[in-house]
Image (cartoon, rainbow, N blue to C red; front, side, top):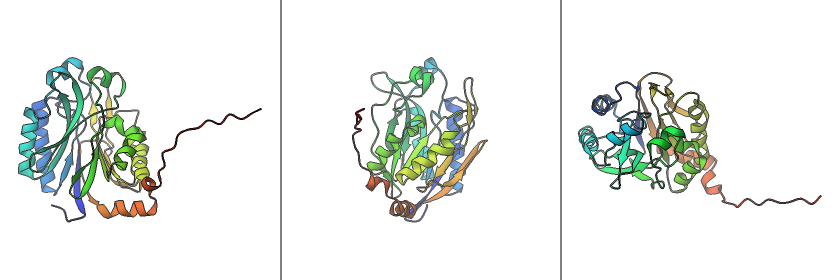
Length: 273
């Protein structure tokens, strides 16, 4: 366990192999075991981790679970044993039968802290497979940090990170399933989201391919200055980095975008000829 004012974050950059729930649960357990050995407090897995991302509408309907369903119970038990907070993606079914691209946040005591449903749906795959979430969740307190959550395409809209930062987030955790040719998201947009909001951004991607997409890896943690804390390229990796609360304070003293932000309407001035 990390000292006060800091904690240790892990990203499991998963391969796309064995995209079925039992195999992914076993891999999750192996990843958690490795992370325990490295003192990780918070471990983040990619978007739609339990099933794979581009699996089609029928598979999504078949595999979707309630937020507190069987897989969540297995992962909650794993989190309790490891004393580790775990974030993972999966297809979520609600009581009305709608299916969402969701993540669960499971505490180190096995409690379901938050279920977030992706709001910004990307392309035909997302729009065919899922219903959109209806809003963002308030940041939650973990290890002395206020942490907000998004999924993949959400973070490509600056308004999303800004809204969460204005709501108090000091870190944004983003499970993703991003594919070529969109490497610029990891290379440019993630550092920008971090710097323009004075927050850490944790971006957890796949590496490999499925029948539709080629996933590029490049999982990264960026600090509030927009610098890489740690970054992967290709391959399956467990990335681990220590996150310091003082870095947020330092960045916001240097340039406090959130305090200086003013919401203003756009006025178009028509010039006379």
